[in-house]
Length: 452
Image 1 (spheres, helix red, strand yellow):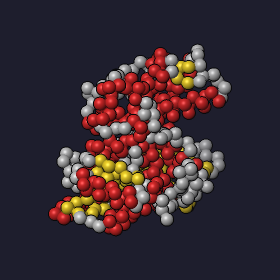
Image 2: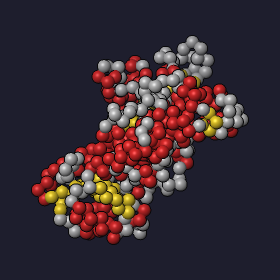
Image 3: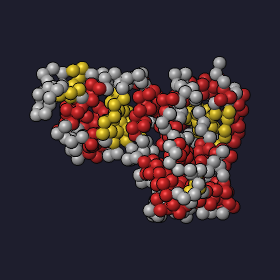
Image 4: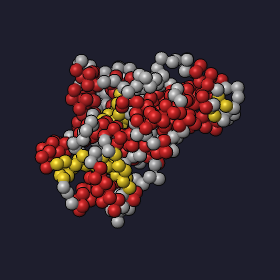
């Protein structure tokens, strides 16, 4: 029997009596229930807790149920939502299910219908599926350092599609860790015992890319003194990771498409094709849809590669991971015996958390290495960090006077995550006194205790 005490449900309704009734029924069934009287309050609570299910009324003042669903889907794509609706709004509720809402319930409803729908939603939600690994089974993602909600949501999607063998496209900025994610997907797949072969398409000259990927026969061209096995064959039975696929020469794209469709490659100079069993994961920092529109990338190849698209968030959208990453890089350097450094001063860490990070995790690692190399004391001061960042202040987090609504809420939530719910440190980073900061938290329904 499922232990419902491990399941958290957020109920959203502007009718206090109905909110209380639903909460009592769910609590009676053993669920951990959280309440919100409007959409904005619900979003604020979700920054501190991660519910397994959201139940929301369709008609509410201000942000209605569908607007809340859209916001949830943008932030937590895999989280199931059940909509409550009056009989006269059934057509709207049906339309909502077409957009991705798990189900709808018409008021009034009985307890058994409510509990049955709730149990179905939680049972089918990927994070609760029996096929998913236990929380301690994290070997597949061991190279990824994170506890941010955005990354956890992405990893949940990645784990969900790992065994499906479909082609994946990872779309993200440079330096975010696309190869790490691809390797994690490979580790979680049924091909984990096979090879993982990464290829940087941008680093291979156009004249050599066919030979590198497909191989060549002996004597195929001047200098081909022996047969060469291509990277497709090297990845047979495993995963081929094509990084920077947007830089693939247009002239070769049709040959790559055929290889993917036919599941075979023909080495340069050979007369016979060679069958290959390869799962392809590709990645790019470019807008491939725009490249297709401009005739720079084949549309048919784009759809062949992009069966499922995963977007790695930039570091600026997962600031709560910065202290974790900094400590990871620092410990790695110290373990190699290069420097006796114990950590960063508080204001130095605050500078790191607030920096713009256009180069993402790769830039952060570079900054850590540089500051450790230049450190003359066990604790690295803010001055060294500022120097490593080249004293760029133009991309720091906006002030609260410039930020409103969604950004303001996420800004505050990011600060609380990064500081572990430490209001004193978070208010200092934000440049506000504690009283003003508490007022901002109250306005956005953010509870510091939820982030500790």
